[in-house]
Length: 143
Image 1 (cartoon, one colour):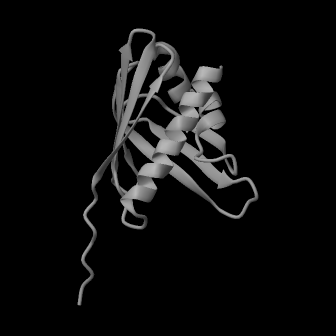
Image 2 (cartoon, helix red, strand yellow):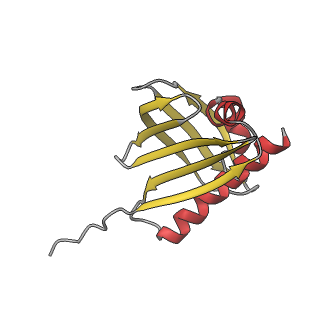
Image 3 (cartoon, one colour):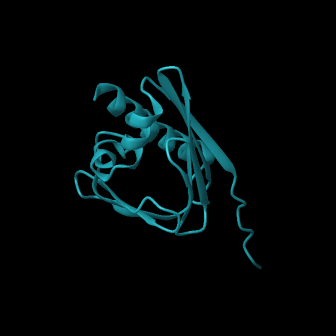
């Protein structure tokens, strides 16, 4: 008997950030900034980030629990980059992620669409990614 592989779904999260797209883009792509917001809760941290922001360039982030109980590497390669507008990348497991930045007046709508992974429920994944995006919004708006 072979196991049926769970088909990945597209999951979308969004946030409206009270800042222009130039600042939002910079905070989303600068490794020093990413380490300040790239986690879903205060029990987590992102101590290392490398970002080669070019098509074919790689992205790496180390995500870990502050108590050292768990951690993982988040790695991807960029497929498309349009500064202050859009970026897309493929994770090491082949899943795709697209991020758009739409400036509307003095705020920017950030929309992230990603392929789900089979280990966790789509609700859990959506909640986790939304929490990280909300943390990003808070970081940008408080800086």
